[in-house]
Length: 284
Length: 327
Image (spheres, rainbow over the protein chains, first blue to last red):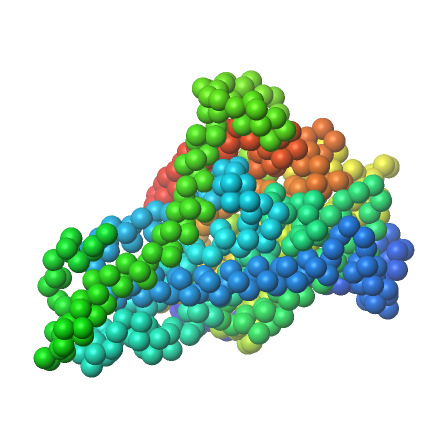
């Protein structure tokens, strides 16, 4: 008769089977990205080699040079544009959402609960379905084809306000806010001196999530920027992959360049990101 | 607009500083009455203008003639766009494709995420690094990863066909993954699964770790093995998160755009294959709006998709609750 361990799974040490499974999962996760790198560093025939080549070549500079000098793709400009849009969106989201989250968590004002319910309801609205009208709105503002059209819809997010409210409600003690008020500190001073230092971890998580989303966004930038001289890197990639004659080592070299910033972010902020995603799941 | 007149003092106001001057008192009142609204105003204004208004305005556009190539052709169209939709073969085809890819991606995705989560739910060495590892696909731009998968699933020299040959399913003529509905759906579903399994696994993992430990001890005493524990204890106890992920992947899956776009031989055509065999609704909306330049019709399609998402998300949430709660 078999006996079973009486421990909860998370207290049971992983067996060799667990680590084998984990290694398989890692291979599955990382292989496409790794192979992107292999082809990006190789000459033409690497793509067609059977069995597939898994060792990086020495053609990275040649391929990159081709990507960056290609006419009508504007790859260099597109990277700069992506940095500008993603950074602006991230900074604005952190600022506006932490302000609103602070107000909802710690300030008293009429209509607070009703307005918070509005925020929660808007969480579920699929924004993508408004793109037709958004395009018309941007047309009236004459922003289509400019980075403003890409940045403006990303400046705030309902999720950000919700996330910040939850975090601030737990992380900032009411007594601290009240005693600062009694000392005569104005609201903005409380925000700056008490709230901001206390919510650094939450800012890191929301910042990472926002940056990743803004960097990877494709549909709306494609709609508003396609055919202009200032695409974002995702739009430029789709340009690179279009046309009658597609050179894979070049396309994947471009794809790799557009992926590198996110890999760096994952290495730096992966810990925070994992924690943020897991905490968000329990709270919602 | 004077907010001060509309609002009586809230009951728990901290007491104002002692013997304030007139200006100080005014400043204090302003700070407690108006500043909160100033703090939330940027969100509501920006979200209202660029988030909410477009969705509502979409309803208006859907009822009008609105063409980009012929601005003179305006005016109310009534329900013309919607009746056209009902008879549009492209729309029904795209709806079928969207659902096909959705089923092929969501069900394996959530089951595999459960499996990955239960593997991660052990006492592990370098625990955080395994968790970071499963997040890599979530961070990788879909546009970039789909380009890799497009090479994997290419007819000649594709790794997928090479692998099929390796395990004994090789064919005389190599499989053209893009050509048929089932194979192109499978390829696209693979990309969606790749991206989302790890993310969902982390959501499940975090819920799994909140399950009280004595439940497992009791189950082990009763002789339930790991597999039975997973299905009989873990899954029912993380049911709220499962419902949450089902709703999330319904909303995301039915709006699928990036993968089918970039999988196409010619990404920017938005045609979803030579015979629209993998064109999704989101793709069709893009094509109708910005290739056929018929914004009114594209808006009507968006509204139809919105309704479909609402219905399917609701049904799925109910189904998941039923399955999980039925013990």
